[in-house]
Image (tube, rainbow, N blue to C red; front, side, top):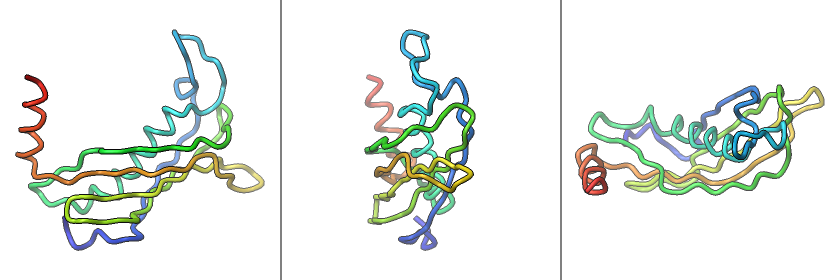
Length: 135
C-alpha cells in the first residue's frame, strides 16, 4: 500500500433509490424502500473507493468482512449517501466504518451503519487463491 492511505481517509457513494434496489423475493417487491442488500453493495463500494487509489501496481484488495445495522427506511426515489472512513490499518488490512444517510429536505438521517474489512494481497497470491478455490 502507498503511504497515502491513512486513518481518517474517506470516500462516498451517492445513489437514488430505484425499483431494483428495493427488497424483492421471488420477483415480488415487498417494500418500496432501499434494501439491506443494496446498502451492503454501496457500503462495499464506498470502502473500495477508500482503498483503490492507494494500491500499488502489484496489489489488489479483497473483501473479508461486512457487518451492517440497517436502522431506518429510505423510500423509493429518495437519495442515500454512503460514507466509508478508514479506522484501522495494518500491513495487509484496511478496516472502514461505513454509514448510510437518507438525504432529506430537513437534513440527513442515519439509516445504516457498519464495518467493512479488506485484505490487501499481491495480485499473484490472490490469483493462486482463486485458482485453488476453483478446483
